[in-house]
Length: 105
Image 1 (tube, rainbow, N blue to C red):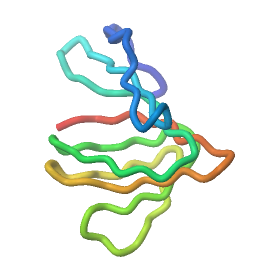
Image 2: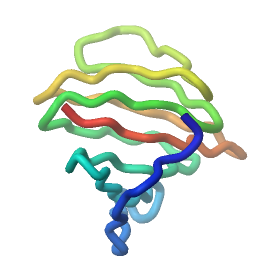
Image 3: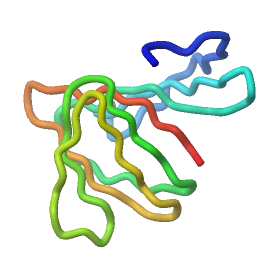
């Protein structure tokens, strides 16, 4: 799917890590919430409340889930799952940007 139709968008951006990650919340007609954003070159750690599916829609990143020893590379058209009440490290290389849709629940 390349776009979402019939949605509401929260105008104020979610800005994390001094602007290294910026997203907007999108609310679908059925009430489902997602965030659509970009992570600029950096190495960041995110904590989760609810489970998340991170869908890559542009660029690439490396990810290490809590408790894992190895990093995995993810790119456009690929998704990774993050358990609820957990965390993950994400790294985006210089000159890159990782564009994503975060699906909650």
